[in-house]
Each structure stands twice: as C-alpha cells, then as structure tokens.
Length: 89
Image (tube, rainbow, N blue to C red; front, side, top):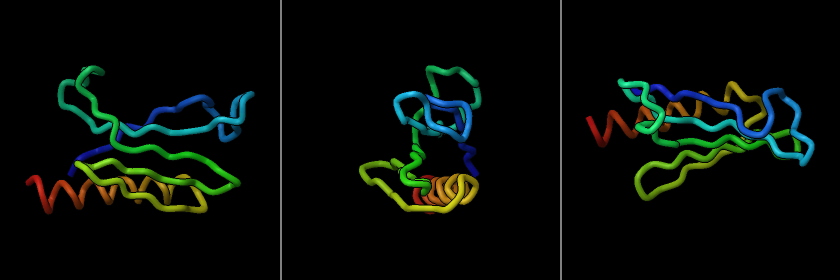
C-alpha cells in the first residue's frame, strides 16, 4: 500500500485565495522523506463547490467529481493502491 502525502496549494483553508485558486496536491511517499524524491501523483481542485480529482499514473489520467474533500482523497488513494497492487507489485 502506498500513501499519498497531501499539501496545500494557494490556500491553507477551505476558502480560495485572493485570486480564487484552491488546490490540494498529493505526493507519493518516499521512504527517505527527501522532498526531491517525492513524485506528484494527484491533484484536487475545487470548482463550483465540487472537488475535482486528477490522478496521474503512467501514461493515464483518472479524474472524478466529489461532494467533499475526504471522498476525493479516498478516491485518489484507491486509484494509486489499485495500480500499485495490480501492475507494480
């Protein structure tokens, strides 16, 4: 099982910044915790009250819409773990 480390982008709250931007970026955890070895694997954007997810794996992109941030993060985690177990393990 691979873990995704989530970071704030543009705004640290549930509200957008002054330019209307809001996002959470997911990085695939690396055992060394070296920031240069982390790989950006997911992005959650908030648009019109919905959370739009993008998961980047190999040459594919998986996206979906959710009502809340926890469902969006769970979806990203599930896509990454399914890929890891079915194709890389």
